[in-house]
Length: 408
Image 1 (tube, one colour):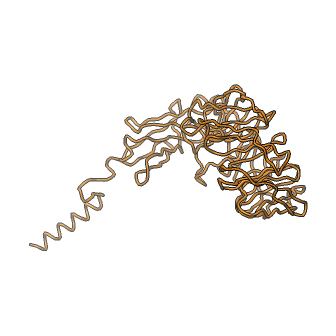
Image 2 (tube, rainbow, N blue to C red):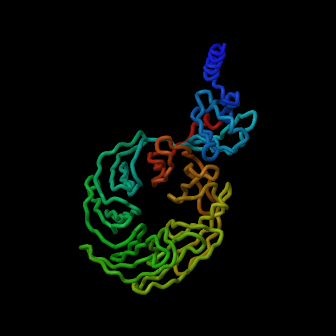
Image 3 (cartoon, rainbow, N blue to C red):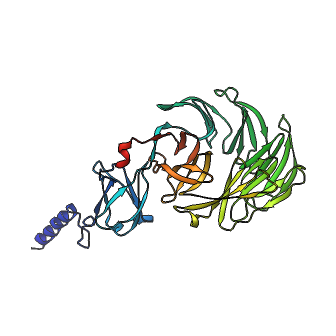
């Protein structure tokens, strides 16, 4: 009799396992649910991502050809982002009836192919990039695709690049600054190594003067004069702030840092004696960047939204910056490419890179979006020459949408 009882228990256990029954007698999948994602007109969107949650209760699912995806039970009632390239991401609360429609962007970005690194120079049909690990890459590209046509080795741990004429300047993490000739873009030639000690993540050049910024909050800027053979001499060291970028504008050094005291502008007419001529103090702005002689102040993250307000300073006379008004954008701006085009992180999903159109006076609105990078899981902005953009280690081209697609 006992043997029969144990046999029945064993059989019941096998049946329970086959039916996916837990020790509590519950089916863990019985409360999973499906969501449907479509265009404005109701057409299913294949490849749309629904993601949210934290840690072990995070979720990320992709819709099938019917626009349907299955989510775990714990996602019910949670906040999520629904997104796909070239549609505006949407923040939702996962509640019945679990149907979500996405609006297409006015234009679209079409991927042309993979590229490695960040752009150092866009020429007609030629793109040169460098990557952090010391790779130089030359690509041929057009509206039909992109292909690598040459490569070379340059110093690793690259932090910043700048091209002046045919000379590519590279700063490294802790191996100083290098210069390479790109007169023959197929074969970069080493010209100069300034073995400046310490970290050299940022730099600015003016003739034979170089200013280097490090990661310190004391003596964070060093001023050096250098010779063609690589010899250099430190002339001054100053700064009590973390430097994020530096550049010369009309002979003055414009320093960007974080928090609420930027930009700082120095007169370096006497390089051994830097003179502070302007000290910005904007408590609502986190950092900023230069576009020509215009300085764009970026708000702190808590102020980033659909109508983010950016302040602009005119540095035509860097010793006396002038307030040049406020403009709005629906993304956290990363760069302004030209008078009508910018790039930024879209406010609904910060990992999405958007291309915006507008102006410094009228403001900028998103016209196309790269929302997800399935290869690298990182939508890094790598530079642009409109209509071409490097996003997520791929080259994209900005195109008009067919009129019919806007209705979907």
